Length: 447
Image (tube, rainbow, N blue to C red; front, side, top):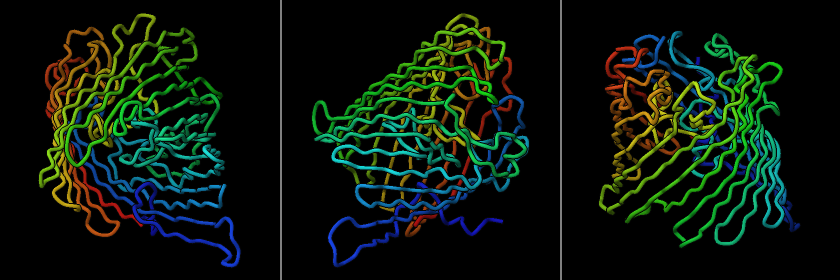
């Protein structure tokens, strides 16, 4: 049974209900509270499973509900957000997990303090950093990632900002597959053994319509009392320059990311040998908006994520996305999620259209290559340790159509077709299930 809270969900609200409390006879700060919410129910199906050790087909119906309240009593800010992410129906042998279920979780509970050009936030919060490729709140996924810690933001003139943070990423619970399948409730945890510290700067170094980002993060995830990890200690540096798409003309984006540091080969307690991490990723795109009646935009993009060239040496070359999102660059996640920013070379040709303020859609085509022949290809779990299966993997076509039905109500449908070739037909553990067909539809409510 779907709870009444279905119509109260985070991150989806386009409308808000506000309440202001003030003494009309006095001047000074006012208490302002914004309440937002909504809900989403989504059904997905997949045939021609590409992942080894799973059934030929898969299905799932999930929903998420929540309510959020954010307030201000200058110079103080505060907020709380409750999210309920559950599965209604799923294949017990399918590819669902902690990314789909997180029952009744307070993903935000913070206080803030603003003084002049500085903003401080303390507590638990969600966040989107820059392009969202490294740190993001997933809107396409069913459950959100929360961070507990402190964040400070400096705001200069002309849109310049500098953000510093020290946060502990949430450990989503329950972690047992059977508990997840039955929507059991357990509050998420965090530990100092898993943390992110860093700086992020953005500004306008060239012209007012061209922006640039530069950042430095340190990500640590080491063994704790109950968690076995690969003891990753990664230094992530990157830069991005871009011009946002407009009503007409050319836009572009280039982002380069480097990862260095140390990591173990496995999570085994007796594995105490550190590997040198040398990995990287690149995203480049150029888009053209002709200014026609369909509000169309044509995009040519390129994505590269490094792979591990020799699994037996003392170096680790596979790029890891940390807590970023892949949806915008690589296509649907959920039961599909074939592509990620790990061991891939992916050019993209994409067409977006928005014929009215109620309709929008896109269609994209991607030929697929492995960056390294001996590493796991993206998120497929398929690998040829010998490297003899080649590097070309096939083709992906995916798209989406979206309709704003009414005030706060949006319908969406989309899917992907993965045609395997080369590596995906010759590697030792391929499924030989043929082409993969994936589709989904969802309905979102917001207030």
